[in-house]
Length: 441
Image 1 (tube, rainbow, N blue to C red):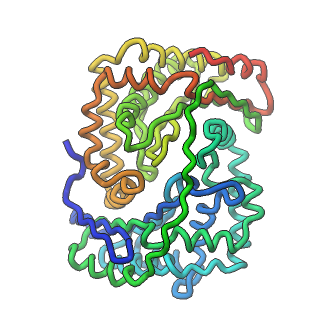
Image 2: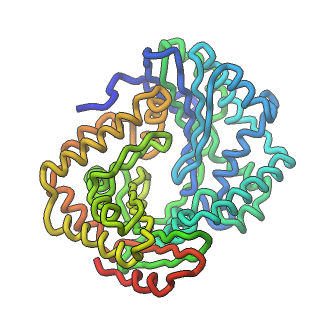
Image 3: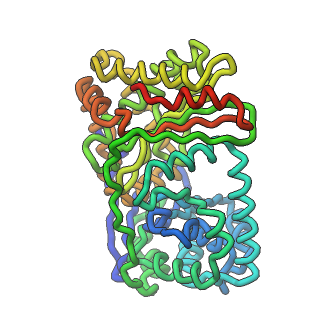
C-alpha cells in the first residue's frame, strides 16, 4: 500500500537547486516550500542557535521586500506562511491562492540571495531571541529536555537545543550570521517543493525564471563528529519553577533511513500512542496505549506521551510522563520499566500490533490530507532520505511484525542506552528523585 503515490516531477536546476513538483487539483491552492539543509546539526560552540537566528533575520527584509512588507503582502493575497528551524534543516513556506503563487516564488528567491541583515534589525532580533530563550528556561519540559539532550550527546552537535546557548546568543556578531547565511542559503544546498493546483510545464518555467539565475554557492561545511555508543546509564536531575514533577526517558535511536526506524515507530504507537512526524500536523488520543493504561489509568501519571524524530544521524526515542500528585518519579519509572520489560520478554499479540499500526497509519493520513501538508512531505522527506521514503511509509509500517517490536525493544530500550531525567519543582522531593535515579530496567 502506498501513501499519496501520485507522480511527482523531480528537476535539478543548473545551479543545483532541486525542484519537486506535485499537482493536486482538489482546491485552487498552492503550497510553496523552500528547504535548506542547515540546522543545529551544523553548529558548534560559539555559534549555537545561529541557524534559528538566521531564520528570524529572513523576515527582516530585502531591498525588494522591506521589513514589514512581507506579512502584509501575504495577508493581502489571502495566504499564510511560516518557518521552522530544526536539527537538520530550516524551512519556509507559503500557501496561497493558486493565481497568487508568483508572490511566493519572488519572495523566497529574493531572500535566498538578498537578505539585508541590517544592524538595527539584528540588534532588535537578538533581544527577541534572548527573551525567547529566557522564556523557555521557565518551562520545565524545556529545561529537562535540554539537560537530557546534553547528557545524551557528548560529541555530536545534536547536544545543543535549536535555539542555542545564551552565551552564544549574547556574543554572536553580524559577520557570523551573514557568513552562515551566505554559506548555507544557496541553491545547491536547498530543495524547493511545490504542491497544489498548477500545470507542471508552466510551473517549471516560473521556477526557472525566479531561481535559476541565483549563483549555486560553494559546498557548505558539515559537522562530521559521530556520537560513540553509550555504554552506561546516564541520569540528570533538574530543579526549577513550577508545581509539577516530570520524568523523561530518552533512548538512543536509529536515523530515519535505518531499517529499525519503522519498527520503533510501531513500538512508540503501542507503548505511548502514535507520534506525528509532521511537525505541522495533528495528534490523536493515546488512551489505548500500554503506558496510558499503566501510568494514567492507575494514577501514577497525569499524562504520558512519546515520540521519535526522523533525522539524518541517530537521535533519540523519548517518553515523557507528568507525575501524578499522589505518585512519585520512582513509581512512574518502575511502571514504565515494567512495560518495557514485558515487551522485551514477549512480543505483542497480533491484535495489539494491528491496533497500534492502525493508529499510526491514521495519524499519518491526517497529517497528509491538506495541500500544505503535501508540500511539507514533499520537501521534508528529502532532508534525510527521499520522497519515496514517504510514499512507502505505510507499506513498511504494515510489514512490521510482533517479533520486530520485541527485537527493537531488546536492542534499543536498554538502561545502558538511555538518559533518565527528573524535573523537580523548586527543589522539592529531592529524596524521591535520588531514588528514581537508580536504573532498574
